[in-house]
Length: 295
Image (cartoon, rainbow, N blue to C red; front, side):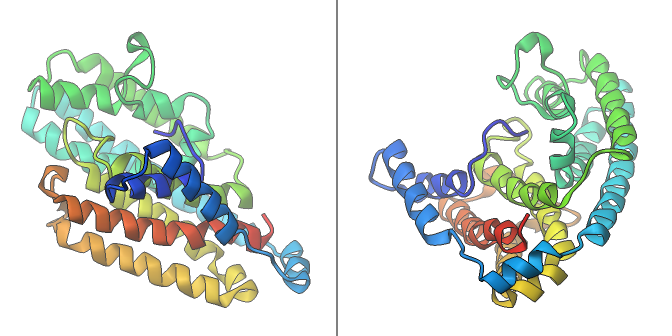
């Protein structure tokens, strides 16, 4: 659920918080933002600018739409199974289905955010919207984990499935361009930095690492689709991004458990800090991709 994005400020601010910087939070974040702006602003060469102006992103956009549709199909399918478990009163089954269903949504979240109220309807956390309007995954999450019951979640479950189906219908004709791809990749990492790596997103179920992995996978998919053009313009930047995706996955790997991930509550503070540092190390070069590609 996105409500604040400034890249890479959000990621750097998270690192500052997690590394226990001695300066005041806002002051330190402000300094970090200025430093980041100064150090990451790229200056593409005239030849690169000329070449990127002629770049054709048609294939990348078409492939991304196919990816979004496939993820959305699975999202609806798994959400339907989750909803059925909730309505049948199968508490443990519903808990087991919750995080895997969400992963398909988290991979394509930039698309949902571009489609009106679908993102807050599906993914708003408590306090993000007025309580009278709060529904979606996290409303049900609170009932399942904090209250330990499915009773009272039936209505929210039905509306969640309806919203998931509406998302699936809209992605067929959603407007997608190269700019959305680039900003979407960066926003996915910012999502991780601002809410997943801090344990804020899944405050009741503590399944944050599922979301963490899915956001990173969604960002990597976009990078892979734009990689051919990026390698033509700046092969060194492309190599750096590729290596930092690998480093982040390596840092996340110890927390993989079967087909899922460990509870966020099991992470130690230094492990959270390392994840955050690897995330920031990837976000910086990834945020330069759009400028290099001219989008």
